[in-house]
Length: 398
Image 1 (cartoon, rainbow, N blue to C red):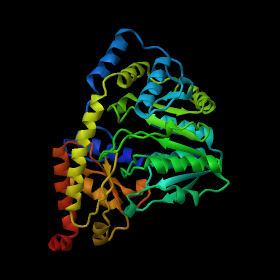
Image 2: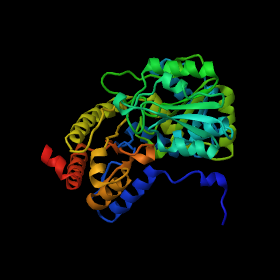
Image 3: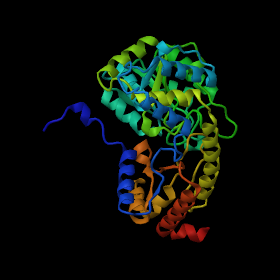
């Protein structure tokens, strides 16, 4: 059977592949420490679950408007306004089946074959494949680990050409936890307006920032023509399986994305939409509680990683990932990148993490600390033991 060229431009998500392998081992009774999944380990708050149950009992189980119910759109723009001071209207909002669908639809609506898309490295895995599928040409912006993987407007501007159509920025970042400062985000939007391209700001982890940083959104800008915001309830409210995301932007763009959605998924699940309304309008205590716990875990895992010979780790500023550099361990083992390290680590010590090539770098691995502190401690113990066997010289030096 011969497949289309466009389907050949994408591959299975590397993070999903790790999750599937870890799940298979768990099903066989293996004690796996799972650092692979980008998923909160907290349950969905009870008030949100009750809203879904109430929706079922009320028979709210039919089709809804393709782009989401009026009630949910109003809840999204109201929550965004309260959190960030934005002023979007429901007509500038599209509800999607998870944040990933919003990104996919935006790329499909904006990118023509050969259009250039600037993508900072390290990047979330799906950005690359979505752009490739859409026919765009990726232009990679290499960030520096010594600068905590910061994205700077000056560096972006050097890559802009007449063919530049889109810049994708994910802050806080998956996989690094890097945060673009508000003033730098504003410079990026000004650059987009001046040079005539669109800035896509992925706000999936916008509520998870540390060290006293305040959540920020470019949605406070009056510029709608050069900006699209994409977001998700998955991480903020621990609703990964509910599949509710959204986009905020100029009404014509939302309409174009809606056209695509009408021929793909139709509406997001009716029951999940009712749950989402409660998440956005109800108490926000769970978000603060998760952030506080993530903060404790962040300190614990970075401290533990820095104590392992052959491993270096910058302190993430947001999200719930660390992106340690394992170049020392790779050099000792004679590996060119972290792929064999991740594979052997899972096979031999049953610790699941994602190798750096999935995110565009060779010498790193991504670890999600959306896991209990007990799991973090056990995972660090196994990782240290594994690397010490590869690098006895490091252990002796310590």
